[in-house]
Length: 79
Image (tube, rainbow, N blue to C red; front, side):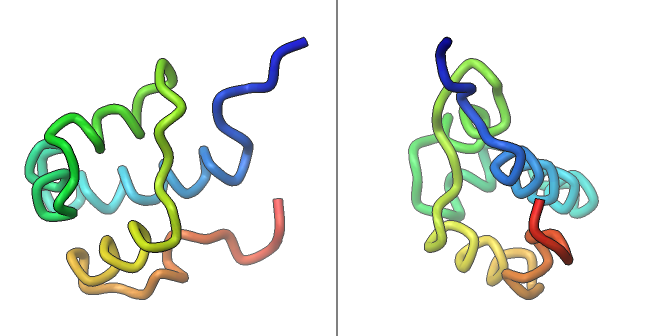
């Protein structure tokens, strides 16, 4: 049995970032560029076809871009 590409916590964090990105009307391309990543990076993270995920450094940079706390991307309790 193969492992899923993303765990429950991965999907939660990706969903929170996507939700915030859409609230602020920032495109996947613009966010990738603000992160200093490849143009397709955010698109790949948000797609279930790829194994690409955010790491701790990404979440810290995303918090700066979104002007929020990195904690805003995490659930209150462990999943």
